[in-house]
Length: 387
Image (tube, rainbow, N blue to C red; front, top):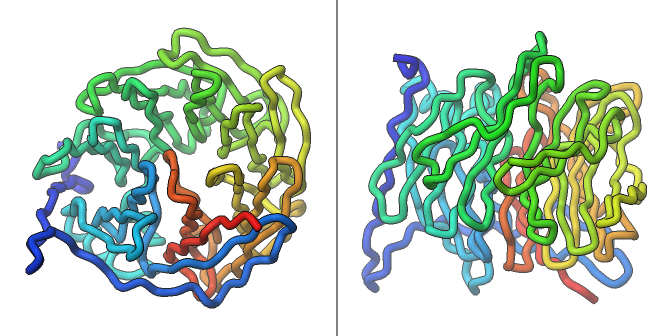
């Protein structure tokens, strides 16, 4: 059995009934005080709260799903009091339960949930080390539905309006073997190959993003030369067209669709990084420079955000994690920053600011920082306020 080492038994725990008859489990709210955002004319970020050992994974309207190790939680962020309710607990192997109990060892072994998608039916599809798992609404146990044999997990899982779910293979791939994109049409129960990149075409898939305005999927791949592609696929993957390719500036992992076009950031240690807009007519515009590689992006109401990581190179000397934002898509500013901690990056991960997937209607920005001084494995919430 391939699960001898990394098998998971995942169970959904029902919370204890409170004296008032409502089931809930919550953790204390910690107010942000150590970071002050720069003010940008016309808008600002207002600190709301921070939560230690919490990683934000995905939004479903105003509900934020987050994990603490192998425990999945959710909270209604637009409510007067933020109360985290336990959704599911992942019963990992004993050695992973041990490593996930401390910050450094969990970073070393890349423990916990790495991606989550919420379907309109309430089903959850998640990526944990070496597996794709699902949880039906009202179910009592997560079920392992697919083993990840190449690499340890995809970086993202995306869903279309008809609840088809997609993820792309992300593994080292030094021999440039063929790379698959998988699809599930039955809420994660079974998985089939939706598209295959032939051997030598790409190294791996960084992200797949659904575009509700274009009614399509954007596929981001890397890492060298013509492998760096931004592709547009139909929602059923019957048609796949390469829109941009062949440059380190088309090496991207984060893309945000809007009505006027899509915004994407570059992710390269070999050149300076930038934010770009690709409009609906196919015109590409460079909008802003970034201090380092960028692999996460999100939008909150009209504001768009990209984060940068600490990935030192000749072109990326930055030792701080940054958050960049724009209220109008044209004027960009660095809003927040965190200093990389002292632990080696190769083992204990690059400093980064993770931005959750999904549709966010709360008006609140969620940022999960990792490998940063004073904010390691911490989620902070910021209200986007228009002045």
